[in-house]
Amino acid sequence: MASKTVLSAVDLGLFTALGDRAMTAEELRLALGLHPRAVPDFTDALVALGFLERDGDGTAARYRNTALTATFLDRNKPSYLGGILEMSNDRLYPFWGGLSTALKTGIQQNESAHGQKPLFDVLYQDEARLEQFIAAMAAISGPNVDALAEKFDFSRYKTLCDVGGASGRLAIAVARRHSHMNCLTVDLPVVEPIAQRAIKKAGLEARVKTGVCDFFAAPLPKADVITMGLILHDWDLPKKMRLIRAAYEALPKGGAFIVVENLIDDARRSNVFGLMMSLNMLIETGAGFDYSGADFAGWCKEVGFTKCETMHLAGPASAGIAYK
Image 1 (tube, rainbow, N blue to C red):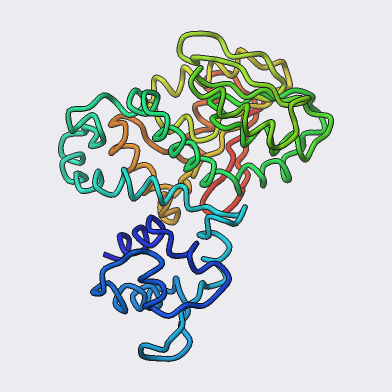
Image 2 (cartoon, one colour; image 1 turned 30 degrees about the vertical axis):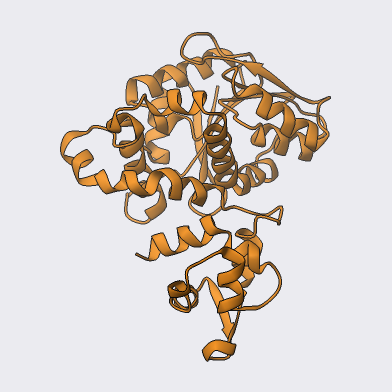
C-alpha cells in the first residue's frame, strides 16, 4: 500500500505540481485532476510516509515537498530520479504480483508471461516504452556513474568502451570529468539515436562516440577500460561468463573491466536493494540474478584476470573491478 501510494504520487506528477511552493489539498486536487474523495487522505498519507510536509491542520493546511522530494521527484529539476519509479508504476508493480508464481516455477512474470514477447523485444518495438526504460536506467545509474568517474583512477588509461551503454550516461560522466579520455558507448541500433541526443546535449561529441554492438554475436570493441552498467545481472551464469570473457579479450594487458551493479554484500545480509533487484531479475528475465563482489572476483579470475576489487559508489551500488 505504501509503495503504490508513492508510485501514484510520482505518476500523477504531485511532487512536480508542488515544486518549490505550498498548496492546500484542494488546490492540489484541482491541479492534478483528482476526485474529491482523494483528499485529504492521499496528501496526508504522503505526509505520514515522510514524502510531504504540512503546515497547519484542516482544509487550510498547506502541503509542500520535503527537501528530498523537491530535489529528486520534481520532473522540472535536473536531479530528478523518478524515472525508475515511473517504470515501476507502469510495469514492475503489477508484475511483482506474480512473485509467488516465479518463486515456484522460475518463470519470468513480465510481458512475456502475459502473452506478449520477451522484455527487450517489447521495448525495442515501442519507442515510448524504450525511452521510459532508458530514462529509468539513467535515473538509477546516474549517481553511481558520477561516483565512478570521481573515484576510479582513469589517469593510466586513454580509451573507454561502455557496453550496453543505453543513453551514454556512463561515457558522458567519464569524459566530462577526465578531459584526456575518449569514450565509446555501444548498444543495439534502436538505442543509438537516444545516446547521440544525450551526447549532443552534453556538448561532448568530440570525445564520446556511439557504436552498434550485439555483444552476444560479435567481439567487443577494443579499449583500455571496458564497462558494463546493470548488464551482467540480466543473464544466467553461462552468459555472464561469455560477457566476462569477451571483456577480457577486448582489453590490453593492464586494462580494466568494470561492472556497475547493486552488488550484494558478500555475507548476503545487508544490501536489501541488491537482493530485491535480484528478485526483480527473476520477475523480468527468469534466469538473471544479481551477485556479490566475491562472486564477480571468482568469475573474473577463472577467465584470467589477475586482480579484482570492489569500490563502493553510491547508496547500494558498487563497482566490481578486474584488472588484466
